[in-house]
Structure formats: structure tokens, C-alpha cells
Amino acid sequence: MSYNMSTVDDFAVLLEATEVMKQVLKSLKEEPAHLLGDICREYQRTGQSVPDHHLHFVGYMGEATLKALLSAGLIRQQPGGRLSLYSYEPTPEGLEQYERLKAGGFYKK
Image (cartoon, rainbow, N blue to C red; front, top):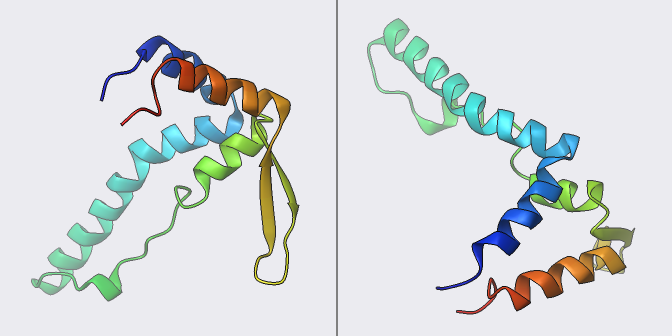
């Protein structure tokens, strides 16, 4: 896959300026350390490997991308229909960023 990395970098700078992405980057560093600590503590306590149902997968990563796009003003959340709680649409700024990324070759496979 070949695309213009500077367009992706420009897009990333826009998102990284949001509080949401700052928390995501922090979570990327901290959540693995928390989970490792949980595993090590239980292993030391029991002397046995830790089953997955003992692990607590908490953190921010699940909806982070969506929240970052909303926070950056690149998409807009709308009430959902019969089968969804919400729907999402791009803002004019979101469409502009999409076009820049596309022109930079990001979406080519």
C-alpha cells in the first residue's frame, strides 16, 4: 500500500489535538501495564496461570476512534433508526479531510 504519509500525518495532528485522543494515547501506554499487573498479582497469589474470565478489560479503546472523530468535528451524531441507537454523518470538515486523505493515496489498496 502506497500513499502520501504527510496527508495522514496532517490528519493525525488534527485528531491528536483533541482531549479524546490525548486520553487514547495515554491509555495505549497505561492499559497494558495495568493488565500485566493484574495478571502478575494473581499469578503470584495462586501460582497458576490466570484464566481470561478473571481479567478485567476496562479502558478507553472501544469507542475511542468514534469519539475522536466527533470531538474533532469531523462527524456528526444523529438519532438512530429502528435498529440503531445512533447514526453518523460526515461534517463538511470531515468530507474535506476524507478527500485530502483520498487524494494522498491513503484509501488505495
